[in-house]
Length: 96
Image (cartoon, rainbow, N blue to C red; front, side, top):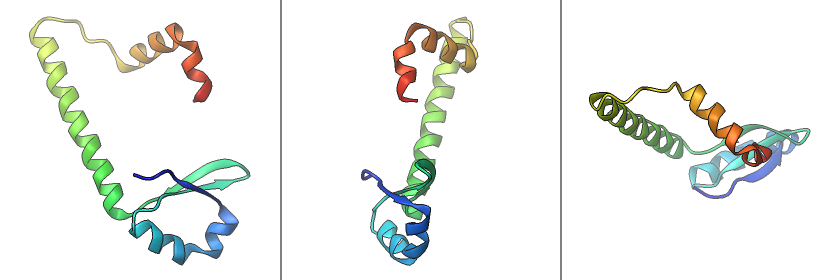
């Protein structure tokens, strides 16, 4: 996927048909409103590919969780994992 072109809501309204055509060809747009990102415009194919990647990752996580459970390893809730990470790496939160 390409680096998104940042475009204002007003400009996106004015050239929506062109954006849709370009998105269909693989271009990505990040739509902003007052410097705040509010939407991403991508092709349906790119969107479906992202969903498929997410499903694949969820399957991998499920398999790994099953393997850990089979070995008797304790399960840690995701929120706790994130909290531990942010506590140990506060500098990583700066870009979020």
